[in-house]
Length: 478
Image (cartoon, rainbow, N blue to C red; front, side, top):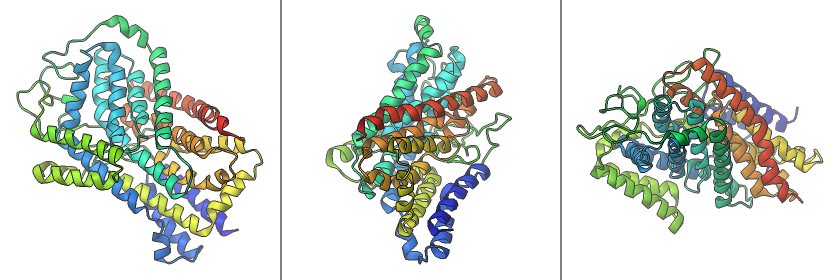
């Protein structure tokens, strides 16, 4: 058996173990990099660590640290309440508010499951109180998170754009962002139409004066979750990546019993006496809003590094409000950092061995470039529905480099198609986002809701990769 084939089989084993045993894929990938690099590729430690993505490490830590501070001091909750009041409680607009809000959060740097963990409990409480389909509300939250997930300063966008740059592929940061935004926006529009959105227009408005964002008096169980002081984005079902902003413990996987991690959106410093507790714009929240705007301006306007800028802004906020900083450090998405760095380090070992070229030539050897591109999209979608979306992208894009180098398939379109295919499937109840939505739904038949999410996830896996391939890849062929 050739060394290249051994390294590919080890990668498959990593995905299988991560899927079935709920072990962090990044930790497995580091172990695989050590084993394959030492025993098969004859690499020393320096050779193995040559593939460690130091720039992405800083981006992941810096951006999630800044966002964790925003969550700890209540800035994100303030944004949620402000968004609901903006539409004056119109029922038909509430699903779109949740879509836009999660999209905005991920676009400015929140990890997708962190945004879902914050918004989903509020969104699903609205669904229960005002008879909105929980499937509609939950999927709008997830697709909203993915709609903003590939902005140039987002976690997913930084990862994919970093891989594209590292592999010297032609790419478009704006094109990638728009592809994901438009794809998820169109899916959301279809869902809104099919799942009763039109009937909501006749429902008028719900009262928002004197109530919190979930329509309840006072601040008890604010945000639609028990006020138990826990910040838990949950450890997803077997093989999912727990990328929430802070996790405490694990819960049973979303299997046959329909159980899922408990998503608890927490804001420690409640403002006693304010309506809903999170509606007061404090100095800390004002400074954090300014910092988030400054991050966008610095990266998009002055082309500064997103990771270093975010760390610097987080340090400023931490110095002024050290209590928030202490809480936020524990909410940095360390599991995501481990996952991404581990997978990309193993990919670096594959590059050193020549496996990337070998596998890419094998895909290109099919003789039908469009068929090969379609197969890659489906591979990304199917595996991502049960495992890590970012992990899949981190592995598939480099594997497609030699195939793309032939010039018959447009690289920018192919990368966008892979990104869309690997992320829209996060509505699956076996993914972290889907499990968070399942857990956040109050007063529903969880078995039935689990089956609905599973069926919808299957439809997305079956349909979206083909559509993404048709729209993004086929026009660039030739």
